[in-house]
Length: 341
Length: 277
Ligand SMILES: Cc1cc2nc3c(=O)[nH]c(=O)nc-3n(C[C@H](O)[C@H](O)[C@H](O)COP(=O)(O)OP(=O)(O)OC[C@H]3O[C@@H](n4cnc5c(N)ncnc54)[C@H](O)[C@@H]3O)c2cc1C
Ligand code: SF4
Ligand code: SF4
Ligand code: FES
Image (cartoon, each protein chain N blue to C red):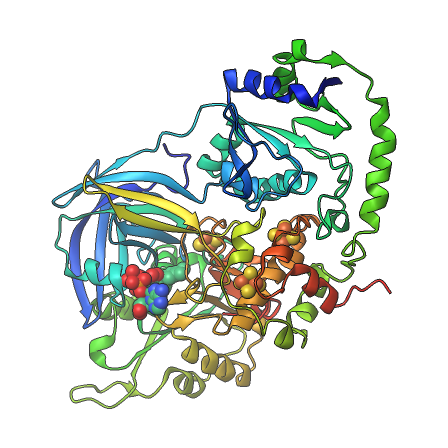
């Protein structure tokens, strides 16, 4: 394990930037989001980013291929898949788990070439939480250890020091390049801090959510639960929850006429939208209740039923804090049973 | 880049047949060689067809896998892409990707069975592929009944093939019906579900049904009354699709992605899914 003074973090960022693009939480115009590091930018590791880091692997909008159309003939221009390495720094444990969830979708057969290319280019430096980042965090409910995040390199900030520990080959390569800025450590002070973090997490208001019954076996029971009727009422169908969510992966494919040809691209979409499943004969989810139910059934029942119990929610709390109507997955879990009381 | 699932191949339309006022059947071959199928498929599988800049949509491959020199698609005009396809001419290139979905279990569960095909309107498209596959492998299947209905005689898709090939094939009975009486129609008149009841099939047969949701619903009732179990009845589902590979989330019903795990399901399998289709 390596450590360096947080006061020297800029030297670390600068060194990483020498060989790869570095993305990390940066405050711009009052909002913290993953952004490209530049000397002098306001790195803000201590706040939850508004948008999740999924953008780096599954961009909000991404070109898929282009076509040249002339008369009756069509020519395909294959995309140039990204090859440039980048480092994603400061990813919290919840978001680090979200990459596993997205991997299940995009790397399962048939592999999504675009996602795979970005995933191969990226090195993830995760940041262990030595206290829950916010009141709305409930990662522990999904078996995520806030203090021991997944990733190529794990980092922690304790007092005025940053600790770095490689977990994969990619991670070791990254640390080898910054070694001279750091000193070796056994990381002893971290153990107590991690335990403290876990204890604090256990006291977070949503940490007592109970997922009992959210599984494939209870699919029909949950689907037909009478509670959905009241629960969805306030939902505006705005899609905010899906856009800020690290694990929401629904997308649309569209064509755009650039004037020089046709660009086919994909962009994030939302199952909360009324035209998501619209067909000539109408839509199969006619009411907002059905669409609302789909989002949560997918995350809490269908996805785990297909993925050995892995939920498609990581408890990041973004939808909890961003839904304009204070509707969110925690409320759904509370209402549909599984209360620890 | 064949391993990129979203990148299509180019096909070219070599003939266009008008079946009904709103259905045309398009013959497509590979554009690079000017002949052959864009890819191999099994009956009931689908393909994503597109005209860049206009749209991309899922269609059943209506030709049989045993037809290797071209692919056919029967397409009903109902929106942006389908209207464009209806006004284009022979020689037009299209993009094609697939095959998608599971298809009907022709080499397993359906083998050796007596079969009843029940179709309404454009619902014949996926079934035609199965029927022609079975006719080409006649010894592997038992007796075949085909019940096919549409609004009027002008709305029967593939009518020439039905008259010239299927009606003359060994051990095949074709039962056509139209919704309302018409001059110079001496066949059956009435809705498909009632006709199925009237024909009174032996409930040991296996049924493949495809058509508008309302027709499927009442046909299932008729079959139930005749003593058919849900485990003997197959259908193919239609939901909005974009990716075709189980990733864009659009066609998700319960634990299934219809584009990948379907579109063919047995009714007992559908019973285990949330009723959202
Ligand atoms: C597995 C499968 C197999 C199929 N097989 C066949 C087949 O063999 N033959 C066949 O003809 N069809 C088949 N279809 C249906 C075919 O995919 C649709 O007809 C096709 O997508 C229509 O595309 P379009 O661009 O012409 O229509 P679109 O322009 O997309 O419009 C279709 C309809 O939806 C409405 N619509 C679209 N978007 C919206 C919106 N945002 N808000 C409100 N209304 C909207 C339009 O008004 C229109 O009525 C199949 C579908 C599936 C899923
Ligand atoms: S749950 Fe909230 S954030 Fe999500 S669509 Fe409904 S109103 Fe918008
Ligand atoms: S559903 Fe909400 S809490 Fe769960 S991962 Fe998505 S945004 Fe975070
Ligand atoms: S069409 Fe994209 S998941 Fe089925």
